[in-house]
Length: 180
Ligand SMILES: Cc1cc2nc3c(=O)[nH]c(=O)nc-3n(C[C@H](O)[C@H](O)[C@H](O)COP(=O)(O)O)c2cc1C
Image 1 (cartoon, helix red, strand yellow):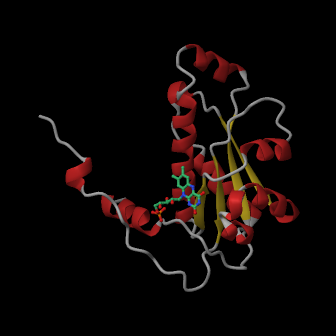
Image 2 (cartoon, protein in one colour):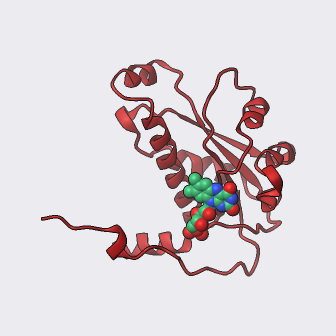
């Protein structure tokens, strides 16, 4: 693989806000999640769980990511992948002795980056949805304790003709420094 292949993947990955009616295979979602879960985490604690919501359960989860009329397009997603904290399990507890809890947020962010890029490589469109009713999501998922849900990722095939937007990013001069 060349660096230019990665650049191409990054340039093609964009937030998709219009999904096609085309169904997404459950197995493809599982595969994308499996690959995303190769993401690194502090102390390899893997303080996470991905919950892919599909089918009949979609409408109520879509509602939970549409606070104040936002994210209307989420209703056309074929899967909503909830990125949730999960610190249960021996190894994870062991890991937490050596680190501050704040790393959990970083780990969940890294996992999400892996997820959206894996989905892109599978030909799927995604949009991270940070606007969400976290409490409602916890209720829908039957979480007993305060597990953090930083965002949900909407997934589907981009609507036919959904064009590639030019990336708007700060310049390298503003955001990169080389110290020698
Ligand atoms: C943590 C996070 C939360 C986001 N929440 C939303 C959201 O609720 N709704 C939305 O349409 N886009 C959301 N986005 C997408 C950003 O607006 C988008 O990534 C940014 O504008 C750059 O555009 P691009 O993803 O097309 O490159 C979110 C992105 C991140 C990283």
